[in-house]
Image 1 (cartoon, rainbow, N blue to C red):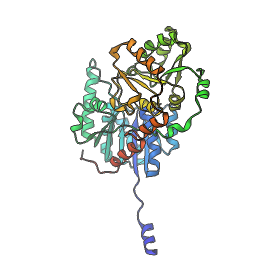
Image 2: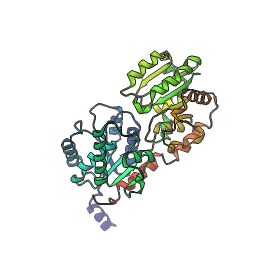
Image 3: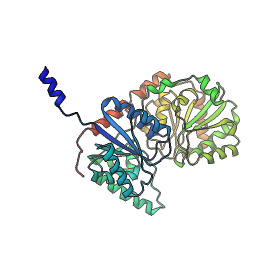
Length: 393
């Protein structure tokens, strides 16, 4: 026994797997909230996950990641290859060496993987999270995307996508035939999301919404692809004709001020809440929002509809949102945007007047045991992080 003990003490410590995630910012968003859940899930497993972001703004999610043991680095000059390379080299020397660089910035992933390859980081991952098409009217931008796609395939060891649509957007049609490509959706810790409840009455009272109101909700960044313009045009007549209907829009982004002005023009500002980015979006889904409406032009996957289903709330989604999110079909209604405002209004009114399809507990268990659980998401990634690269660069 004494000999075995001395041998164990003399053995070199196990090398810790270190992963550097590269994201544009740590503002509230689907990828960022997933990363925080992932960092929390990885802590007991001996995997160190750090973050490189392109924004030096202070975001609450960055602080939460730090609280779980992650280090957060910044490179605001990321568009210049030499600046990005030097930053990655410095981080790798002082806080690494990293086993994995995992990039989440669509086409810009190519630049990250290109810079990571000469640093000897063996596993270089590109992860596609949205399906917004490249504008055909901008040839230089299309040329840039073509070059970055070449870099992704040349220097990436694993090419992941949150959904089939997101994979086709970045890697091209038929991408799954390439041996480095696979679909690996983001997940959430849906079971723990239920632990921060305050109660319907308290939460609605704090927001100034009547307890018995019927609330239409949307959670997401104010950007073109989320299609807030359609949502406001569709909701305005309903809010005017139904005294108990309210609208809550959670999030921030470049079009927020424009949408606030539009709500005033439509005469619904008094019954429309713009909350800004909130860290308790899951609570708002459970205790405030009655129906989630997502009229997106495009969506890589859509973690918010998954959170809504885990809260037992019906979802009215555009057909542009990948069908992979339909985990609880009884809670999903879909319409193409081409169906028009009247069809969306009718569908929304029906959902608001219908009894719950199933309880919150039953819905939460269905989503928590799906492929979108944080446990499955982390398990799949851990297999990649700890294996040998599938091919040389």
